[in-house]
Image (cartoon, rainbow, N blue to C red; front, side):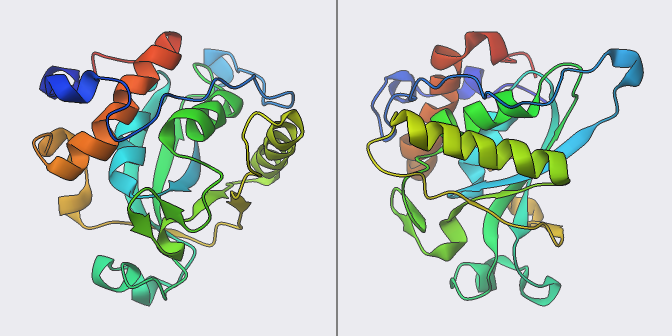
Length: 220
């Protein structure tokens, strides 16, 4: 995948445009071990943090993430369509399926990016200009280990008082993930000229590079 850094408007590289600086976070006290390559199989987790365009764009630039797919989670298959989800009554959240190589990155590192760069986890049922339960902050674990790590990190961050307000992120069972329509995939890379993207999404990718340069995969 081609990096969007070459497509970033100059204004989008300025910190504070649309999105605040990333909040520096400690590593999770509970994390999955990084596996050796010969024992490693791809793992996945579904994350929701506002409009899925920006969530996907950030994770597409994280080392160890092999694929990020925009979609819907939390509701039924019959309502997993954008025109219905955008109404806010389907139970779905705009989400991203993050597929990663556990020999290159741990779940804890992904969650660190999620809580500090992807979105503001203290906002309830909204992110920036987008409001409604479809924009809630949510984690949909794929297994019990992911569930434990996610809940432990939320508790750790709340106890640390790093954020001024309690974390609103919910951990929900993953019934099924439904990929979004094709025109939502790779939206930020395809539409860097969009005012919404320039204001709310591109700064998140820039913040990833500033906050965690060791996790940044620029040449994808």
